[in-house]
Length: 176
Image (cartoon, rainbow, N blue to C red; front, side, top):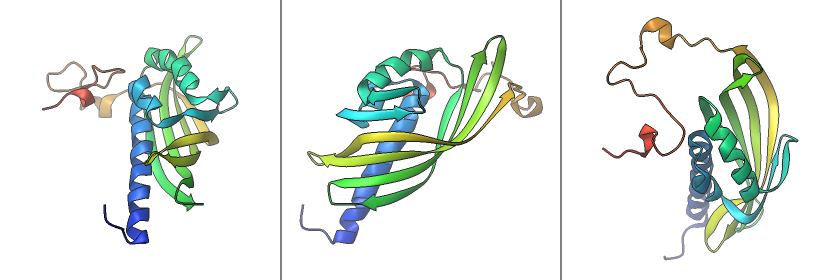
């Protein structure tokens, strides 16, 4: 590839990092372990809310079985702020809002959480991946699950209404 204007090269770097962030969100929501691991360098560290600090691959291995048992889950990415220290090192802060449907005791809750992903990205062998991640929690709201499907406008089980599921049987894996 010919030498690029440094500004264009930086745009390519940001785009590759955003792809990693989007892949992470899809991988966690689908409970796809290999996809999640593809976002991290093998020696990456994951710090996750005081519940886990250690190797990111080991975190994924422990989280996937729990994620696959959960109901609906969605991670929505917001604004990312990039701080490039060198051409091989960047700190990236990304706003995130999550929804997870969880069962606690005998209640089903929808839990909404806002926070940030603080990532140290490193470019190794030409690829940007997460080398260290800290998940920061800013706010949370738990509410009893009350699913009405837009006041009954949509009815699960109706032909053509497709619901998301964990794993490779989710409609996002289909090609049409």
